[in-house]
Length: 211
Image (cartoon, rainbow, N blue to C red; front, side, top):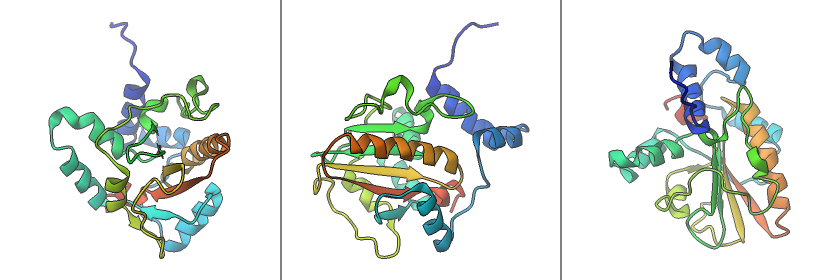
């Protein structure tokens, strides 16, 4: 029997795979707060944003076209991990005075079970946060905005440089419990900056459901 210890990224991703493929998925789903995968109606979208405690009306959604765009952006097999990072359902990206993210935190890197350990090592206790998941040098703010859909007249933003800090927050009903836990940490962290900031909310339920 091997004594090799799996890293948090591997454990978290294996748990996601278990949810979709294992006969014990029902138990795992209940422990992790997982709900059925389906798109939200417009009314549900607004209701869950309110429950989330959304800090702005800059709301968007990502569907299967978003995944297609990612595959085109990362066509090489050596870029598999970057591709996989960007289609995770719960994550946050920080953009400062650059079109490239200065910080990212993705569910696969949080570790922890049944609750994810978003604040491992106190990463969100200081601003800017301590390093979370690897920062991508290909996926720019402009690329992101081209491939998500604005909700209900939300304006299409062309740059992440209009304010000192922009957080792009990916959330879902599918695992609303973890979405809410990460969102609380992000808001508290941004408040530590004492600078103007905004959060863009990207709902991922549509592509989780394969639509």
